[in-house]
View 1 (cartoon, rainbow, N blue to C red):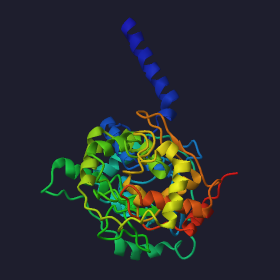
View 2 (tube, helix red, strand yellow):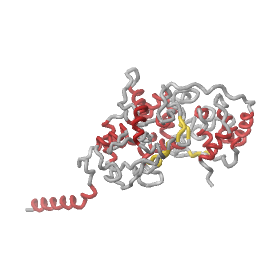
View 3 (cartoon, rainbow, N blue to C red):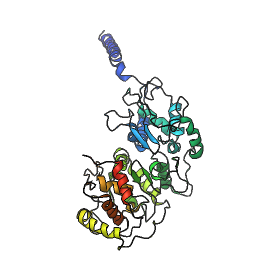
View 4 (cartoon, rainbow, N blue to C red):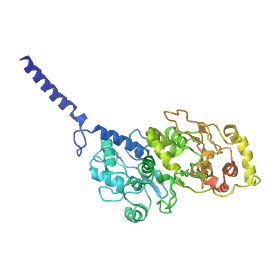
Length: 419
């Protein structure tokens, strides 16, 4: 009798639990009730690797992956979509096949084509299994009702049918193909860089239509008011002076003995690379070091050039206190201008922006200190900023075209000084 009472009590308790807790245990309509936790964890890591947060989470909102962030492109702005499992405004009603088609082939469930602000030209190198794993993880997130009107582009770029021509010119769908002549580590790095990490989306030069310039992979590009530098193994303009350990330290902590991550790269380090495995960071570094890059821009301007003379005086007065007269700064704290090849990039955009507006480097768990560069735009004229920028870009073995006052003015105009 006692055993019977226990069985009845257990049954009633189970019934109460199912009734009371069912709303909290609900899953998406198109998903099985069971959860594959290894698949979900794999999807979480892949989503970090692909930096889904960087676009799909609005930094002005507390909602994760609810979309609405404005993505700046040369043709106008696109708002990132809601990728929470909400059935009405997110991806909750999508099948795995529809999600895969969007991520790897740029096709929405309604048949319309996505803009390459969604980096499907790179995600196409991932496997369907990887995409399904990401979807499995996204399905575990809180559902957020947040309708987003993604297309904010002006005419004629707002007409999506034009993407058929763009895809024909620049999109080559297909899985990553390992190079049998390279090591497993190199191939892992190649897959990460060309696929989920989509480094070329920022660091490869673009045509007037926004497609990758063939023959110049990872050689730098101006984007969103910054210049994403050359990240090939070029000694003069790329990562040639950085060791594998230097690249790993930068991606892991946002700092190394040469440089510190600021701007969009600071976000990437915080949201993505600082959370990757050491093995994957090393694979990325090995691959990047092996990429051929361009030679120097030419010969340095002579020290007697008027801009160099003026720039030298300004540097001594405003910059040497932190960076030193030798330009070497302080490892892991103040960037080494003498050995930072990025200062001699094809365009001075980032250097001008930092001089005019200042910059805050990233803080990570391993490097919680985030040194800042003060703004000098309120103190220096366009001509003075151009002069000191020219000096930095043509000193300590660097060589680059002189910066004009007009270029400094354009950067200042693009982002007015805060009151």
